[in-house]
Image (cartoon, rainbow, N blue to C red; front, top):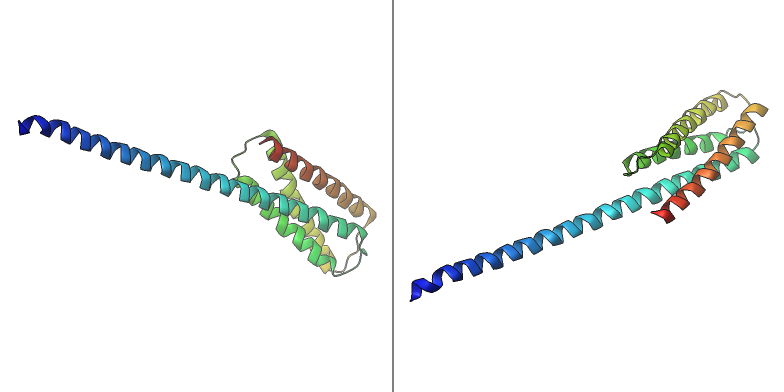
Length: 155
């Protein structure tokens, strides 16, 4: 009589153990998804913050005196934020044609401000053409900030 209950008991224990293991795997998967979502949110907000800092620093450059050595700080902040934003953008799981344009913009912005910082360090003044370039960059960064906000709302 005892042998008759051994197999169902072993199967019941195996079923309970399998259910426990399955539940643990399910919880681990959910925790992983939450962690991943938090990482993406952090990257997005870091990206947005860097682009907003770029916009602010470009605004400051447009109204500052063209020969001020203090502009070096603004140029270096823009350069740093452009590459920081580019790094964050590359880590986001978004693949779209617009994203490659944004990466190209950030790369060119970083290179341009680095070159402008070198010129300022050597004592050269901003020309009217360069002021116009800064204004165009500022306008594009404003559009980029708005696009990032719209993207976040869509997602």
